Length: 149
Image (cartoon, rainbow, N blue to C red; front, side, top):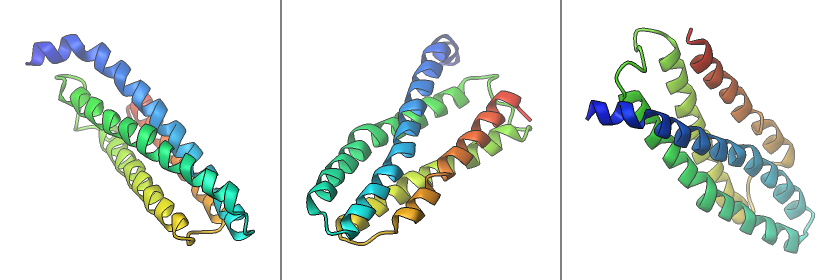
């Protein structure tokens, strides 16, 4: 089994990177859609808000959720590869906390989509502020992996 993991390492790592890129694109874009949805919904513009709701749903279900699942599966396979992670160092723990926080943010976005559908949710300004969280988490995760502190 360990030989198979070692041989497939470059493929799994490639899949992991592609899945992370797709997931991150959605995590950056969905809050921006929420900004437009919240601002148009409050102005009584039903048609643009309805179109945005469809875009939000498809982005979340068809791109972000599968990308998050692939990110987790490939990441766990990478962690299972012998010699890749030294758990006595701080960086794997920092990365793990960052990925768990990113997953929490994903789930929070899914909940906010349901609230927006119900005519509730935050203001456009609040969604703009929340849009910074994935950037901060990305910086922490990438620095953890690259610098291995």
